[in-house]
Image (cartoon, rainbow, N blue to C red):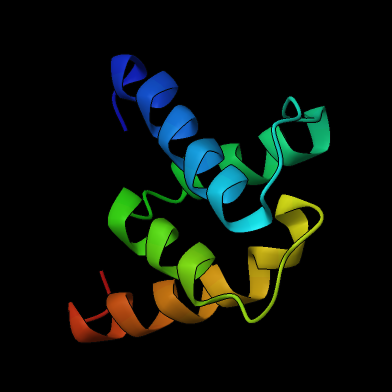
Length: 83
């Protein structure tokens, strides 16, 4: 991922999480690390947003959405031929 794309990606992830969690708090450093791992793995933003959206319930922390995002990413990577 290009350096200039990282901030908008993180902002979009956080905005989606805040909508899902119904919170207005700032992102914790551990939550930023989760987002950074998704960026480093080149998981497309729409896939991450889908994973957050598909989380069942109201997450208290972004880390709660990791399994849901990972499922969406695995499905996407498999559909794309294992990129």
